Image 1 (tube, one colour):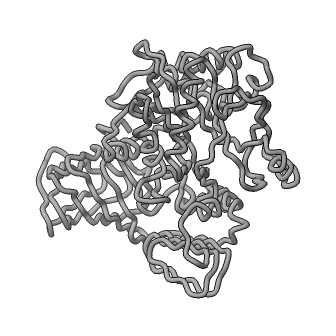
Image 2 (tube, rainbow, N blue to C red):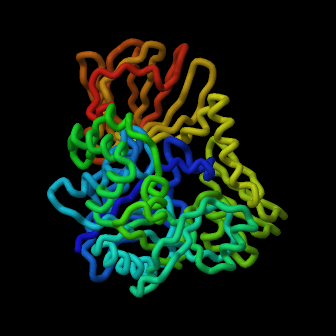
Image 3 (cartoon, rainbow, N blue to C red):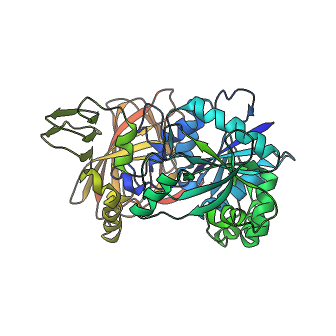
Amino acid sequence: MLIQPVVLSGGSGTRLWPLSREKYPKQLLPLIGEDSLLQATVRRVEGIAGLQVAVPMIVCNEEYRFVIAEQMRLMGKEGPILLEPIGRNTAPALTLAALAAMRDGADPILLVMPADHVILDTPAFHDVVRQGAMLADAGAVVTFGITPDSPETGYGYIQSGPALGQGSACKIARFVEKPDLVTAQSYLDAGSYLWNSGLFMMRASVWLSAIGVCREDIFSACHTAWAQGSADGEFLRVGKDAFAHCPADSIDYAVMERIAAGELTLPAGVVIPLSAGWSDVGAWDALWKVLAKDSAGNVAQGDVLLHGCRNTLALSAGRLLACIGVQDLVVVETPDAILVSHKDKTQEVKQIVDRLKRDGRSEGQLHRKVFRPWGSYDGVDAGERFLVKRIVVKPGAILSMQMHHHRAEHWIVVRGTAKVTREDTTYLVSENESTFIPLGIKHRLENPGRLPLEMIEVQSGSYLGEDDIVRFEDIYGR
């Protein structure tokens, strides 16, 4: 019995701003432990006794492909990464994953997991996966419902129906939208309602059959996009135009609710209760709940000093953060933004992100430190007609051959050796040496060494935006 984990990594996590940004969302961040949430999700399926588990398949936006590939490489898990040209919600993402899983004639059981969830009790998770695998192997579509411990209004619910006589599995009675507080309390009191986790198991062929019946338009668009796709190393690409015409819908709306309503004779819809310290880390208060606390209920990460504080979450990404005499607050420091919020209001962080977008401010999308396939850059200072960056280029990495219309660049190497191409001339620049790239000159930067190349770049000119780049050649296909 082959299990193919499918990790859906398409969310933006705006409610965890300012750590989570649109261009570097929460699943890529190490919010709990040293692993990112994505890495923790991949690691969670290791060592499930009695099951053969393949290397996880990641489904993600093209924009995150190199960061995700690097995180997988660091884990020694260089499996397939399926690229969505544009976000179309979870039902199309799973349909592409099912088509990819069957590309060699196989029909594995798909274990579908969001990349940005937390599960603290891995053995308990393994137990329900083994139970779910047996049911999925028999043709069922299985979801895992979280046993509620509070009247939560931020989650959808699944009402469990008659028991199946196989472990704790039950038939799905119905799916319920996010309730108000009174209704959520009634669900908790009833004892037959579970939080909707977004975790699923089913055979690839079963999903394709179900989506073909329930949403033939999604199936057709995905099938065409897959047929027009190609493999690019570990990346699996699909036809961009065909996928752009695919309707957006979730797994629940597209298929699961119709199965629960009895609109499909097959497959059966099954829910298995899961009590394993689960959280979708949907906002800062949710993160506070799952992190270890001191005797006063505080969580402190980074360079943080607390005095007389209670039930406070304080995170510093660099600078010293001091909190005195506060309670029930969330304080998050990053190099370019600071968030201060009451824990009861953290769901409203999204409104700040929306305002940043309306105002055209970059803090909603990018960190000051920006990751690229060749390394990273950090904007350390800026003023009228100048910008200073700290650039790190990975060993063997090559930037694009490019030119700028509005700026010149001065490069100072502080560690390593740079290979510089300027028009038809190529030369090396060593530590404590510099070079100048005039406006309008074609140029390229490479790291020929085995260690990271670190540089200071000083840009000067009338316009210093990132879109002032004309690329002539790029190994990363940008």
